Length: 149
Image 1 (tube, rainbow, N blue to C red):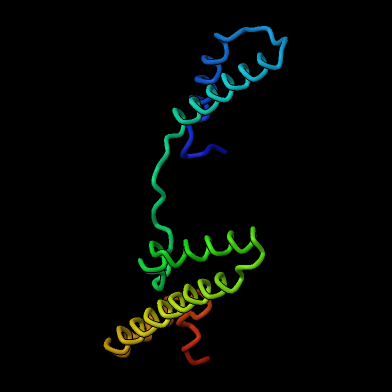
Image 2 (image 1 turned 30 degrees about the vertical axis):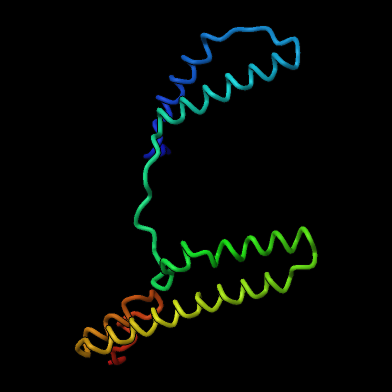
């Protein structure tokens, strides 16, 4: 089974080419370090040539995650307060306050997203509304609405 993203034959050829030129004696710890650095660089170079990095798209994004949660100082403030409290063992109240503010913004984002979804769904015709509600879930198939006869 081959990977569609990495050309393993190219990887193997590139690695063989890089390592075949290298012959050396390993006698001291400094030699070991040097050899490991050369080997590591060869493996990374071959892998990057055989499987170039790509932007992965198509991930399901949650509608309630907003810009305020991503880039605000709330998230970094929570992390900063946690690390400060963990090291000093007396600033836990500041951490709790920062975490509470982040959770409040988090819940507000979820509520706003749900409210937007409901208003968009209510403004559609009844059949489209049912399709939108039932079409999002794998467990709710339209077959469940049919009569047994």
